Amino acid sequence: MTETNRKLLAFIDASPTAWHACANFSARLLAEGYTELKETEIWKLRAGGKYFVCRNGSSLIAFRLPEEPFSGFLMMAAHTDSPAFKLRGRPDAPSAGVYTRLSVERYGSMLCAPWLDRPLAVAGRVTVRENGKIVTKLVNIRRDLALIPNLAIHMDRTANDGKKYDIKTDMLPLFGSEKAMGRMEQIAAEAAGVAEEDLISTDLYLYPRTPGVVFGADGEFIAAPRLDDLQCAFGCFEGFLAAEAGKNAPLLCVFDNEEVGSTTKQGANSDFLADALWRICEALGREFYTSVAASFMASADNAHAVHPNHPEFADSQDRPVMNGGIVIKHHANQKYTTDAVTEAVFAEICRRAGVPVQHYSNRADLRGGTTLGNISTAHVSVDSVDIGLAQLAMHSCFETAGSADTDYLIRAARAYYESGFRRSAEGIEL
Ligand code: ZN
Image (cartoon, rainbow, N blue to C red; front, top):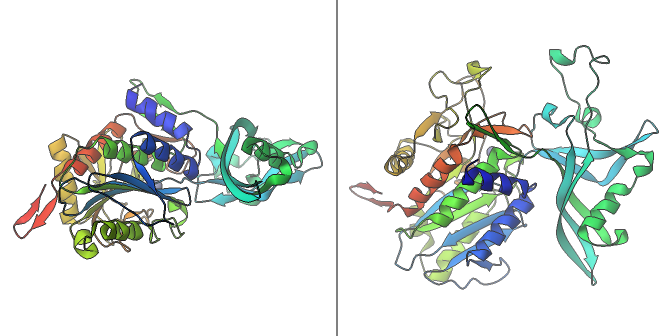
């Protein structure tokens, strides 16, 4: 396994929820000498400084300020959340007089079948009473705690003919015997290091315990939970950290809640990025509008690779393959923000960095998904390109991608941040 894939799988394993992903990025940034800014304080920034700010503990913006005067911000965006099952506040539900199940709701739009018959653990954040205050804590209960059992083929002879999953009946995980009622709260309190009566509330999610792997005849593929979009978040982050100073300020945002439409206070459809840019400009005595007009955004979210068993779902030409490098996404109605100018900028950066580029658009009669680009640029209107890495089984709890592609993204992100991107009357310099 390559060093990059080892690190990617370790990051995914340590990031079962958006809060954990954000905490892991924060810890790394602090170790690399970045200063954490608080939204509740006035920002004092200096040229040459390295900073980051979190919102809700699940979205994060990191940036560096060049020593020299700079023209704008080179930004990348990815998302920290993935579809999962969220535990209700009172998480236990009796069943058949002999079992206890966990009571769950769906977060985002997942493929249900892969969640069945595999060990599941629980992670998220909880609030506790501590020294008279409400304190938030992250918990990651790394145990085989629950499992959603399939119905045997003998009881559902049509199970292989197309199955409709009813979340309220089919997707409740088995958690214990009838004696396990109330145990989930006890276990969560224990994980948070408090007495049960001091546990106030929870944002807890199931996650699959299956560890990520590299597979294939020659290790061509990687399979793991949450590749959408932690693979892109990790690749952009590593490229951001590795980049030498360029002519612009490098900025990375990772947003929560992409899987539920981004319309939360910390999602891409919030003022988080606009606020951060405004505050950076204000602290440096720069003009906001000219700074934004000189900026560029690359939104990175995974893309659909052509499927080995179902190539008919791909467009006949724009059909990316795993290990084919950066995917540039196109959509005539601008669900993806790419246009001729922004494609040219990013493709040219990749060409100069020796990173292959391929193209994706939805098969013309399929609706496709949405992503961060056109949502965040509605708040901060900059030229933007939508990119990603090719993968299979998007929104499964165990997805497959190319084992060479994360390195391509790291190289592309680094080259992008180091580029001399600047517009003039004559054209765009890179
Ligand atoms: Zn995504």
